[in-house]
Length: 363
Image (tube, rainbow, N blue to C red; front, side, top):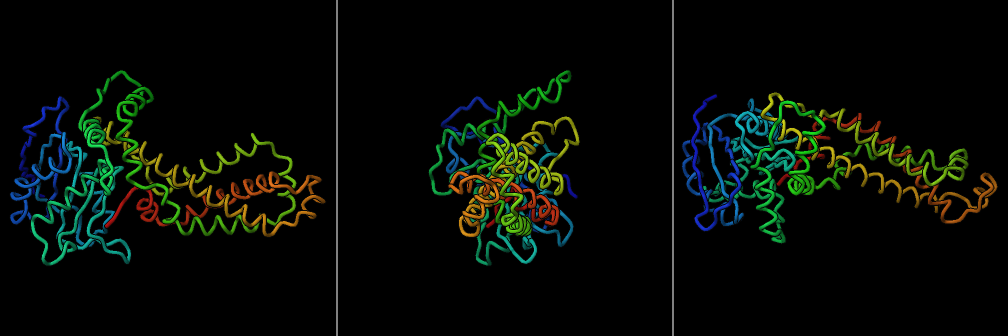
């Protein structure tokens, strides 16, 4: 790999932000470098200022291959993230001359707001694509990373604040313990963290985990007609039901994070802040996705209870009236057990499927 690095600093002449500039690093395939690098460094500053007012930028470009030939889209995205950590950039965009593939699917670009990185396929932009089209694609990646609403509903000041948080380093005090340092990182980057999570669209996580959902549904169907479960639901207090739901969500969240290797450790001290944010955003994204899964299973279980559980039989077995409250408690119990069944399904998922569902967006 070449270590040649080109850099351009582009302050906005109309503003003078006190915060340091956001450092955007471009990793350009060597075959594309001579054709695109100089033009991108010249064109991007004005384009970034146009779409992201109030943010100052520093640009770097290096001609490197992101991965071995045939590396899939997720592998290239993670390689861009690793290069960003090595170089100390705030955002990384890989530009490749290969088609981005993940299984049977191909993409123009793939972005992880959680990891502040993206990768773009030049061939996928089309045979008539121009340098301007590529520059626009880079800006689109940056906009996703900073949580800009594609429909134009974002507050420019809020976007600029997230950019400021991304570029500002938290002091790393040698004597400070990990808990205190993590609290300072998260407290100083609240808007950025929430933007990362929102951009990853965690509520769609369940749709990407077909095996987990299938196993969970099967578990719920099998337990629905178990009379012993009817008795347990009738006896359980609201507190016990709440604890069951919390345990179910925590079990699936932990299974996904550990099983797919989503938790990261910094390789050097300078990476602590970025990796802390990565991990916090990943945990929140997976947690929200699993909560959505749990609620979907609860609603499905409630429908099954109303359709399949005979009221007279329920009263005879439990001694409780078969009213809506008892049905809700039974559905909550069944949904919780089904979510636990989903933890088993999570172990059956391909790690790439879990990682892609947890924190990437594609076009």
